Length: 379
Image (tube, rainbow, N blue to C red; front, side, top):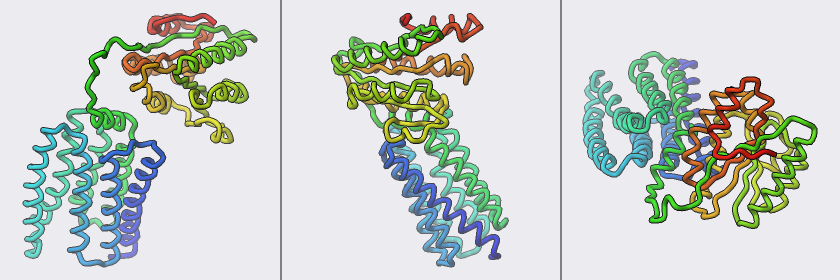
């Protein structure tokens, strides 16, 4: 093995362990829900990376292959945790068969049959790949990156076996795609929903229903004062009722001193989410997140999870919707809100969105969002 091949092999192993550390970090920072799936993939990545580094160090091939089996068992155990019970039992039986066949082929490697080595590698990747592809077929694009990354990892190990450093470059790329798929927000939500396995209570359908309420405002000099007065009044009302208020501010359009004043009305009942591309120092006071529709949608679901079990519901305030429309376009913002309407209604979450009709020259944009709203409130 020349120097270039050894270097890329070590980088491959180090990156695989880094994937494990990233998933673990996300779990402890609560950006990923603590679950068997994420724990298994974090452990699997770590063992897989260790196996690669041992191989680079010249350890006996039997030890590294044993670790590879263990790592893949963790991978498949994690992905199967997301499948339904019957499918889980079926896939367990299929896996045991694959493991038996795979062990047989690897035992026959002593005869140096290249074909048997190829089949053995295929079987090892297949028993993880089948579970991933099954998840992809059932739950759609949420598992697409995971499936693409795993297929690419398989082809890089099988088709590029004799290509030296190229195999490790493609393997690193494949693991990067897998990592992006694991931490993808849509995939996380689906994983959470599957794991919850909740059944509706007898009173389902009769509780407090959420929805969208547009706060129509004008762009004159007193607009900020009116909106601030309304927000403080609303927070006080919610605190008296025992419900929470979540304020989402985009690109620092509300002065931080006003946000502090609102927060300290009741720090336990008021949360401030600041979506900003520049704010840094306020991270100790508010939850500062990068600006983007995906981040906003993710934060909305994460921040309101506790509302699912609360009889009081909660209120979310957007400052302001018109800014999102100008930044990302009416179609994209409308699609995001439309996709969230069912979640808002069934969990008793009322979304108050400040909207400036005069900012939108196209009247069809105004009509689009006013028709989507359950109520129009003029400030």
